[in-house]
Length: 266
Image (cartoon, rainbow, N blue to C red; front, side):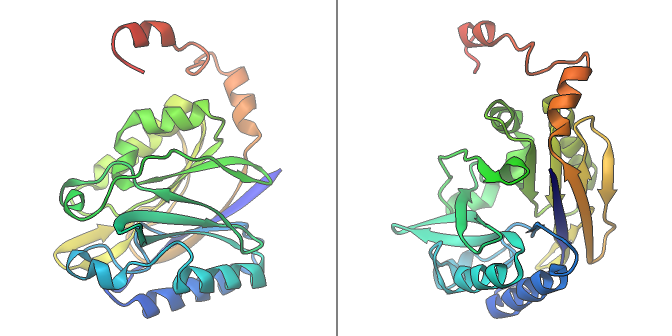
């Protein structure tokens, strides 16, 4: 079965939650008649990235007003959404992503596990590595710095994910790194990777875009430039099993789990 995803490479407005929410809603509407199953937005798109001084004001629970409005729009249009937002839960703050189904239901929340540098001073790291079911196959979520830890993608592959969707906030000078990590995680796990990055200037950080979809063989199937762009790609997730069977590089099958464990690795 085909899963059609849209990468919404957009410029958010720092601190302006209502402005960013309207962009999310209008993008969902734009995808209504394009047979899109899910739209992937960048990391923390709802509020902007550098929000530490206003985090308490901007954060909301997973069932807060903003997420509810996105749910309503998803239900109205039949377009699912993966959106990044600052979450408050039991007096802790998380860098989170909500996966909203095509029926408007919350399929689950991913909370960023690997916090980058300054994020550690105000966000709490997530402790779960969830899999989300879709009609075309199981998918998973990562965020920016998570992608740089190969263990995360490997765990998802072993748990059955056929596609990992990455909410990115990569800025200059990390443009060369982003493509390397995306291709590596896809190739070494023989699954699809789809990543949406931000664009534009936020404070002193310039986000460079280059959102992309990578095949299980490590090839770029589609890629954005450095400006705002919406690209739509249809993926046949069942091809993951076919590729793993046909290719001689059976990375998952040929793992030496017992050996790794006895030497202190998972």
